[in-house]
Length: 272
Image 1: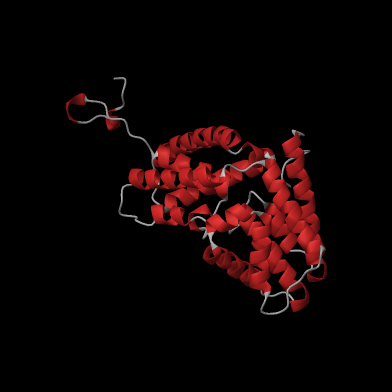
Image 2: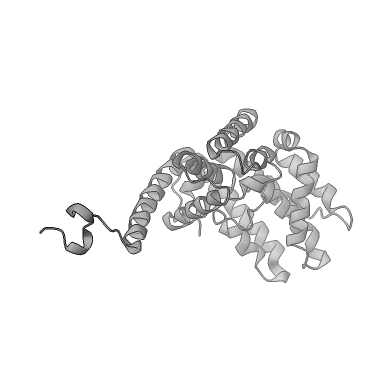
């Protein structure tokens, strides 16, 4: 008897029993293979962002995107792949970003089959990129340079005028995108930035709010929590007395790194 009796059913037909631990092992192997595929996809579809990340950081971003896709009940290969790609292109929080209302609209009908929701998400993304174009190192580096120049110019708005100043700065970063996104959505970015910077003293709060709103405009509304841009969270976590200076310095350094990417220079070690 090749198959032990305990693995046989009536009539002597062998039954394969797979333990839960074996199932989990199979799932882990499949997940790892899919992550490997997503690393290649990211480097092809969002090459500049991915080149500025270490391998470990890129995998962390992809793992987070896969997990977040599951919250939208994306379980099939195509929809999950699309979600990961958009997270790399538009930021890990793209699905709730007020600058991208089409994403929330496509994902906001949970009872609709995931393939239909993924198709709506794809159409929205295509329309967005058709209108504004894909990210380029020169464009992103230029926006960061202009944002740093604002901060260094010390044109800090007084109390009650921070929102208007932030809107003006975002329009100066990229007028075409600011117009396309719309004022109402930009004001939501400022509100989130204000909440994040709410504990700062008034002397440094205004400039910090404007800088953070500008970074959200460039990298997505959750850029301060995005593993793709850990330098933003690190700068915001600096000592209060030096936070503004640290943030400006970081913006300047990353503007230079994006310019280097435009010139084709290899990053020294990825995003720290």
